[in-house]
Image 1 (tube, one colour):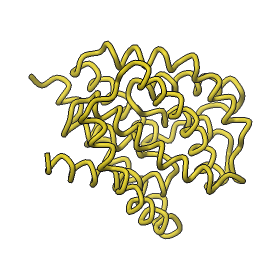
Image 2 (tube, rainbow, N blue to C red; image 1 turned 180 degrees about the vertical axis):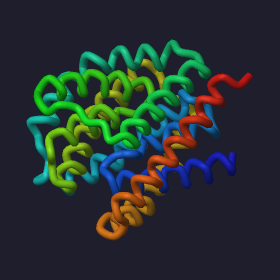
Image 3 (tube, one colour; image 1 turned 30 degrees about the vertical axis):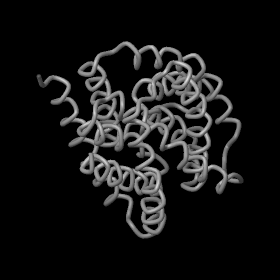
Image 4 (cartoon, rainbow, N blue to C red; image 1 turned 180 degrees about the horizontal axis):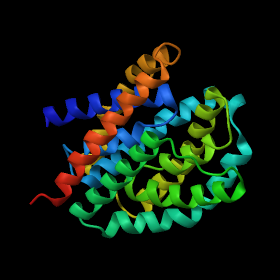
Length: 241
């Protein structure tokens, strides 16, 4: 148990630093990394719950930089996807859920690697909202479609980060309520989440300090490398045993 708590703390700190630097990455890094130490269900529920504490604080702090129209659009659209995601989380077995997590991570790694973009507009935001709802409730990772949609808007780095945090916060609140209503919390997921929350302070502090110091290409390679390694290891675990 001690090793698990240390792992949870370190994963949360590293993932929070990534989110501070880029505006995303907490769940995208945290879920597959934590899923190497616990079952996928626990990783999804714990990381999603912990992320709420992180995104809510940042959304409030960066309130004036949030593009609220886009947040409202993707949130309303996510109501279509969240029930589907909750069904997936409740019914998929351990190996299949790990496979879904791995595929999401590796696909997004490919998007980053090849610099793929999506067209700007309400249709993109609606699709991003629905798909992010499915992904958040099932894998804890709603970042990829929202990142793609908000990047297409050409926002400044600060506005991009703030808008993402606001969208994450509202969607996660809805999903955590869904977790409670569908009885997804376990003793282990609560313990892991409680251990990880203090790590957010350390991780965000370090990431925020590096926000204006670490060059884009260097951090891009760090995130990309971590995504590929964690995605491959999670995929191997999905098909092991």
